[in-house]
Image (cartoon, helix red, strand yellow):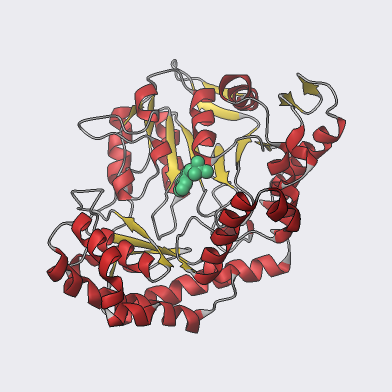
Length: 441
Ligand code: PLP
C-alpha cells in the first residue's frame, strides 16, 4: 500500500510486520481466521464516516438513504445465510462485537440481578456468559446479573445436561446460554431448550465459534430450538470483526401466573442496542459483513467448512496416534481440546514454547484444573489453516511439529526452574542455544 507507506511509514511498518507474522506462522487459534481481500477492502471505505443511530428509516441523523440500504441488505443476507424465514426471525447487524452482543441480549430481556446460566468459563464457556470466582466478579455480566453456571461431566468431558436440568429447576434462570469457546462436541440444543421451556427461560445460543459451520450447514443449527442466537462475524464465519443477534419475532413464555404469553423481543433487542448500550453503528463493518455473508452462500464456502471439519478430525487422530489425551476423546467441530496432564506438561509452557517457533495456540483450562494462569490444556482450531489451503496430511505435519516441541518442555524446564515465568524468560534469552528449537523454526 504505497499511499500508507508514504503518509505514515511507522504505522505502515507495523501493519506490514503483522502481515508477515500472519503469513509466516501456523495459526491454530480457533477464534481467528483470514477474511477475503474484498472484505478488507469494504472496511476501508467512506461507510466509516457516517453516523446512523437508530434503525433503517428511523435514524437520528439525516443523509442515511444509502446507509439504510447497506443495513437492510446485511439483514437480508444474514437471514438468507442461516436459512431463516423473515416472518419468524429478525436480526440486528449493529453489535460491535461478540461480548457486547451477549450483553445486548441480557439488557433487552432482563432486569438487573435477574438470573442467567451459561457454561462455566473454566469448562469452556465465555466471559460474556458471566464469570466470577469466589474472590471476585471477573466479568461485569456477573455484577449486573446473578450467574449460576453449568459445567461438564469431568469424566466424559461432555456437558452435564442432567445437572444443568436439576440446577435450572432450583435456580429458575431467565436466560440460559448454549454456547462455548472451548468445547469440541456438538451442543444438544433440543435438550437445553426443554430445560429452558420448563423454567420459562429464554434460550440464547451463542454460536460465535460455530457460525461458519452452521452457515454451511455442516453441523446442526441452533435456530430450530432457540429464542435468540448471537454470533461474532470474524471467527469461523470468516468476515470482519463484528456481531449479529438473531431473535424470534414472537416468543411464547410462561408468565408469573403460569399463563403462556407471546412476548415481542424484537423491540427489546433493538432498544438494548441503541440507545441503551451502543452509539452509532459501524456501517463500514456492516458492509463488510454483507460481503462475507454473500461469500458464505457459495458452494466453495461449503467445501471450505467441510474441510475445516475434516482437518479438525485429522488433528484429533494425529494427536491420539501420538498418545495425547483429548477432552471428550475427540471432536465434532473446528477445534480440539488437548489435555496435557497425562504428559506431565501444562498449557502455559507449551503456548510459550510454540509461539517461539511461530505456532500459535491458546492455553486453556480443562475440567479439574485449579489455575487459569497455568492450565493443563491447549485449544487447537483449524479455521485459519484451512483458509490457507491446508488439508489432512498437512495437519499431521503440524501435529508432528507440536509433538517435537512437546519433547523440549521438560528439558527446558530442568534448566529454567519450576515457574512458568522463569521458563518464559529462559527460552526468550536462550532459545538459540537449543538446536531442536532452532530447527523447528
Ligand atoms: N462468545 C463466544 C462463544 C466467544 O468465544 C467470544 C470470543 O472469543 C465472544 C463471544 C466474544 O467475542 P468478541 O471478542 O468479538 O467480543
